[in-house]
Length: 451
Ligand code: PHE
Image (cartoon, rainbow, N blue to C red; front, side, top):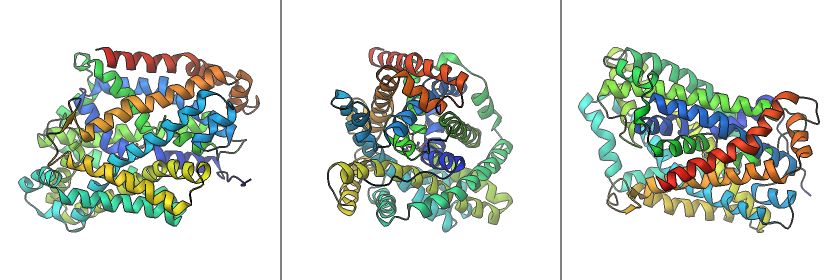
């Protein structure tokens, strides 16, 4: 048997998990989803979904991962041999690959924007030219596909070449840098004329804007942002040492993810209002707004603005890559550990599959924008399918497994390290895992289905 590696320290555990959690979900997805569902009221829903449903599922995945010390597919089989629970493993292989196929398209947009920053396009062009850039880029056929190809090649290259450690080290530097840059952008955004409307949009809840979809969207965003329901957190937890406090590392990861998302909203949304962009403009929101910010900044300090935009996109790319490799790795681990594949063909096969599906996603902003599935473009359809359905389904299986199938003694053993810590908080979280999280998922999904 292979000797399984362990994360060395608590900081390493939180960094690795936060590396998977913090990504385009925070910077790209959160601002536009909250823009589609009305701002402040949606943020409150999102915080509730994160604490009451997502966090307990995070713990459920951690318990399964550390208890089984196994990959996502084999874990339930190991803990409940011969039962049907193992079928849930299929979700953990399919969902991350589908997510990666459209994630990579957005990763590609970041690659393209990095090149634009490097050639000073945002800072030297006229403001009108900058604001029209996204729509012409995205509706073209080849350029976005090329960028998507570069991104998926980077992801495959990292998973293949074993430079994962290097990338993770790099990302450990890039994340704090991104954090500081977002702070700078917040301050700058808030000084733009017209931005105060954006601030009240984020702070004054208007519950009349929440429709039935908003609940599913908030839950879906919480799953997406914390990488839940697809086996990523489960897999990472299988490398966590016995002595490590799962509740503390879970709260650390979830808190940093939440703070990052809210900061991104405060950097982007005030500028959205200042630029006169519609907050419900959809997946392109951040990519339409950032060039506007950098272009405005350039008026005051062109060199500083160019440097900030370059560093910003490098950091976003690092954040996106650490999330994307965690998606591809789940499938690669499955093919190599369970199906006897060698690492190279497994990686190439899965990367090829996600590349093909990603091309359809990319085209759905241009030549295929008229092709709709259940009223959505292909890109939106896949995103809704994964975040609003597949991820919650995976999460439901994990919480039911931990709350109802595993013995209470073993769950307590994992969450309290054999009774040495968290004696009080464990009871609270066990209650959330057993009742609140599954009821929350089912209630939200039913509402979404029926209304
Ligand atoms: N949480 C990542 C992000 O916010 C996306 C992700 C989803 C990563 C699922 C892994 C698994 O960008």
